[in-house]
Image 1 (spheres, rainbow, N blue to C red):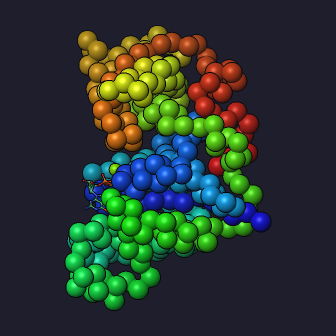
Image 2: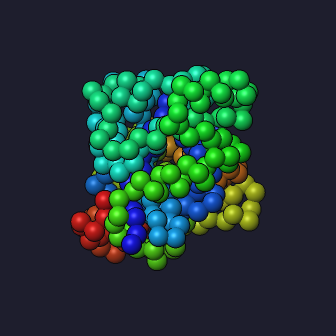
Length: 293
Ligand code: GDP
Ligand code: MG
């Protein structure tokens, strides 16, 4: 019998979400790209170990004050929370006991699934503070995403609370995915963030070259759109927008792989790629509806 499910990681900015996710990526996660229907969801990776598989989702903006007014972001984040089988609520232990998740997220009640509180940055917390945190939060997992302390225990806790289920993604699929796909996903996500709703579903990204043996790591990426008019929007006045997309994407990819990156970014028109199964596959989309989440 296998267990499999969606694990959603929530936490305030600076709690250490990226650090935790990168650590897990560095160990066992493989990266996949999200399906096009959920352009603003972020599937961060799939972690398969033994007979347990977790699909890890991020909830951009759920607890980030600057996103509070962006209803779309918030409703997507709330959906990710509702879709979760297990929620990991990550909090910075150096700031004391966190408020309950439903208060931090300004929702009426806690999600209807197990919520695991993980207190992060324990490497910065002294014994006395640790003892009082333990007293006040008997259920919490104490971790350091930076050193890896407690992360395995957290993962096995998460795994034990996932539902009995066949793997959501075939193992073979997962094995063939790589950081390259996630890099493409980050470029696409960045383009979408900066385009608001002008052309969202028409944007795809393909990584044509990814040379990790160089420093900086050389990545050539192409953003595909369906029409010339969309290409013009993406490029912007005197190339200002594409430069900003490139800069912001590069920062995210550097954060993901932990090394300096040279991102060579291009925009091309590929008419009707969304209606073309081969293009969809090329961009890492699963083309059969209903077989994933
Ligand atoms: P995010 O905003 O939730 O994604 O947080 P980040 O992962 O970007 O981390 C915010 C800051 O906290 C960064 O400077 C990290 O290096 C640092 N950080 C994250 N986890 C730990 C930890 O376990 N220990 C220490 N000392 N620093 C951490
Ligand atoms: Mg982050």
